[in-house]
Each structure stands twice: as C-alpha cells, then as structure tokens.
Image (cartoon, rainbow, N blue to C red; front, side, top):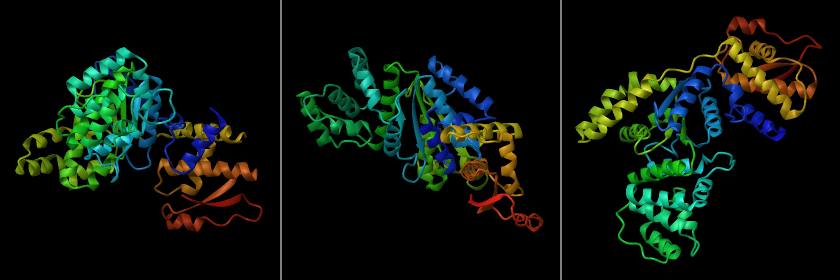
Length: 413
C-alpha cells in the first residue's frame, strides 16, 4: 500500500470513521460471515443467487461499518459494481428518488477510484452491441421516460448532454426539459410519455442492475449502513422503507443484485418490544386500505428482527486487529513501532478497564497511542476522558505517576 493511502487510513481510524483500506485488517473474527458472503457473491455471479440480501447486526462501534467495507473490497475484487448508502434523514429509504441519487453518487466501477455512474455508461458505449442491448431492455421493460433519457444520452453528440447525465445521476428532468434535451440530441420529437411518478425511480435502479450485466460485470452489490434510522420516521415512511428492502431482493426486477444491510442490534429489540412492528404496522396499513403493502412488509421486518449479531471478537481476534493497526501505522509514517499488536492491546486496556467501551474506541485509542510513541520516542500512558466514569475503587487506586514516570497525554475518546 502506498504511504499516502496508509496515512489516509490511519486518519480515518483516528477519527472513528470506517476505512476501506483498513477493512481487511479490521475484519478479524468475521471469517465465517465473510465466507458466507463470498459464497453468496459467487452464486449471484453465476446467475443463481442463493439469497439476494444479508443483514448484519451488531451494537454501535462493534464493526458493522468495517464489515461493509470488507464486503466492498471483496465485491470489487470479483468485478462487481458496488454502491454504498448510509441511511439518514437526508437519505431515507422511503424516498426512492433520494435513494437512487445517493446510490448513483457513491457507485464504484471495478478499478475506478472516483465514484459515479459515468464509468458504467462509458463501458457500455464502447460496444455498439451492448448499447443496443441495454436500449432494448429499457424500451421494453422500463418506464418510457427512462428509455427516452437513455436513448437520447447514447445518441448524443448533437446537443448538450449534461441534462441527460444529471437525470441519470438522479436529478430527474421535468417532461418539458426532457423533450428539449431529447430533440437536441436525437433530432427527433419525443412522443407521448406516461407520467413519471416517484415510485418510477425504482426503474432507475433496474436500469443500473441491467447495465452492470450488459457491461460484463459480475453484478451489482448495494451496501446499506445504519438501517436503524428507519425507526426515526413515521409509520407510513417506515412501511415504504421496509417495502424497498423487500424490492431489493426481487431477482427478476434486479438481476444479479446483492445487498448487505447493517443494522444496530438495539433496533431489533425496538422493533419487537416497543413498536411490535411486524404485527402493529401491517394492521395499521390494512385498516387504511393498504392490505397489499401490509403483506409485503412483514417479511422484511422479520428479516431485520431475526438477523444474527456479528460474533463478539475474542482476544486473539482483537490481537489480529491491533497487529493490522501497527503495520498500517508503520507504513503510514515510515517507522517501526517497538511492540506487537497483542502488546498494544494490553497497553490500551489499562486506561480503559472497567469501562463499557466499543471496538471503535479501542482502535482510536490505539492510533493515538502510536502517534504519541512515534513523536516522543517513549511509551506513553493514556488518560481517557469522555467515555464512562470508572468504578470508585478503580479511581482511588489510580494516581499520578512518580516523577520521571511514563509520558502522559490526555485522549478525548
């Protein structure tokens, strides 16, 4: 790994941000989960998917996001198109237009570092046969508006293609603007087009799935993080969110598409205990005449409820994680840390003992420890603030070191 990339990874770990470049080192102890996902991807690649979605559950800070990054590395190595989405109030799962826009902006073509769908469209344009094939699919299976945008885009060169490119990126054109762009780029008038509704945005997802196959890729992998944010919206929006999770598993609509969804374990309890979602929400919908939607969402809700948690990391797993951190730090800053990963783990445990901490916090502390060691040339002693109060007996036993003791620096975890 280049020093620049290694340093970027260290900066991400220091900030508590998942790092794709460090994901493999951080996925120790997830071997069984990753092996199962690798087998899923092989079945998707072969066109006989044994499952179209896997849900990864864990407590906050226990490795869900890094697991998603490890899946991304695995999928890109197998020549899958990979898209990522973090659920939030700005990108809720119930808004298909926003979902598509966010996915389009964070899609990675194998071997291309910059995100976006442009590399996919460029790959298809290189082959007249691929272009014609995707156009036929759009014209016969997708909304007429999607087909018109694609046709004008592929037949472009006569006019300004930027409006069409923006539409394919999720900033959908109004019909008058589409008519103008279509005429400018094809020299023909656009005929009657069925009204494009919000739900029609799903056809843009279908277009990307078909395009990945036409481009000769293994398929399309969608990584969704922080799915527990579904719980921050109202009942109808939650229902539409669950419905989208169900639609992402439709192998006929989205061929060779595989999704991995990360959700907080606490949300599973909320679904079952407080919301009683699998029972109450379908009843609420049915009472409002939406029995079909009520039936569709029961499966996705129960999937979220029943997803097994990632296994806790053992001491040997954590030692492997910390070995990876030591190697990465050494590569990033061109030095040789004088301790192993297991030794670093023990040093970090001293100020963190008797506190309810997460793996993410331990990793941040480890990076800070190595930073100080490199700068001062001697082993630091960390004093931790901002996590949880130590037990009284532990606090009483901890005193200032005598003069000449270890270097002490504060770390705000």
